[in-house]
Image (tube, rainbow, N blue to C red; front, top):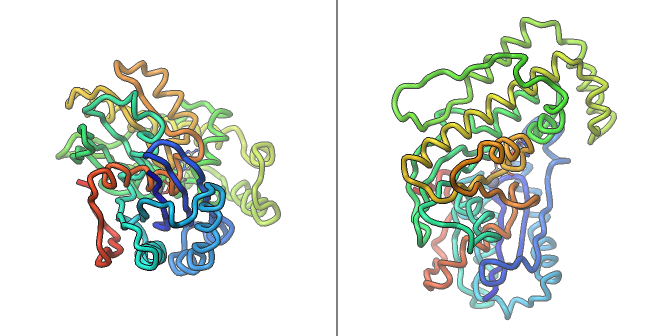
Length: 356
Ligand code: KG4
Ligand code: ZN
């Protein structure tokens, strides 16, 4: 059974064809980084316009690469939320139109469930339930219990910034541009992760909730108390002349103290993520740990999860499936197709759609 997935929740226009929830026949992602990079973050109006431009060619390419005409599709899955409403609407409207014109069943998918299925897609046979899912991206930092049959229970979430957002804000502050995660990931190995002893505030209430805004403020304080204006300027002008500086170019404008700062920041985020993931996994007697979302591509996080030697497998998506894509959306819809649980044309965009 083949599902066409469509994803337009943020700044990637993506389409993919997935067979039986497990085999990716095609996965096309048109990134809008060039558009938003110069503004230091996603500009919602521009994102919607870019989706409008890209949605038809991207979908056509996904169908062609999968050698799958519309008539061979068993369902069309589309992200219904959470995300930017204007962006979501482009994908949803297009999916509804295709569904209506060709009488193909429609399935609205939660974006966060999609991130979890980026791991399920490749590891269905290895995952034992209950599983603990840590979804870490630019918009979300959530811990879910995942039960057999894909029932979810929210165990903890960020009270303020998402982990990816913290990476993005720190990078922007230091002149590394947007998005921040990939640059910090590449430079962190050149610094001493213990150089700056960042700590995270203890919180009242749910011990499994995250908070990253204090860490962001601590980085800001550090920057204010060190004379960094010249190097920050040097990095901003590097970005103006070179759209994608390589690691060497970045290192040339990043003194050792700043490399140490990046490494220490990243270490603190990783420790926090894994500590809370491990305690919630213990609470629910999890048999598998799933770590997914854009931040799951972080090499330091992957290494730390491996080194932690958890008593259950810690599974990550393979490259290209961590950040936003449509294969994960098609995969998340597969159990719904099996149960013939379809949506009608009242399906609408929901900025804050909750998974549980
Ligand atoms: O899942 P995603 O593509 O979009 C959302 O649903 O938000 O995640 C994007 C986020 C950005 O904040 C980006 O900085 C972060 O994931 N990210 C990373 C890495 N690659 C992307 N963070 C840390 N290390 C990375 N290698
Ligand atoms: Zn995402």
